[in-house]
Image (cartoon, rainbow, N blue to C red; front, top):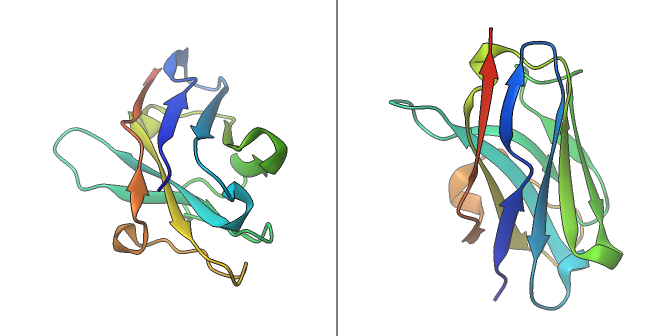
Length: 126
């Protein structure tokens, strides 16, 4: 079992930057694949970025080149650095985790993740 707590959201102007953090409790964080998803009002939850236990990464086309996902296993934390933010990036951002002993798994699908945080609001003003 793992619990996830996101932080770092807020209000930022278009073109600005934010760094989201997701702190995980529990053991064996290094064996978990981690993902970031977001959900805007009236829309479905969508994939943003994912990182495997072996640090392979995957990004949605809409954020590629602007967002960077990373992890610090010593701190049980995954990060999402968001640069060149746009108003369309406004959403609640969720962290997700899935245990994977192979170290090779990472996924853009919400149903592949067993654990979810409560979310943090990101608002980008134009």
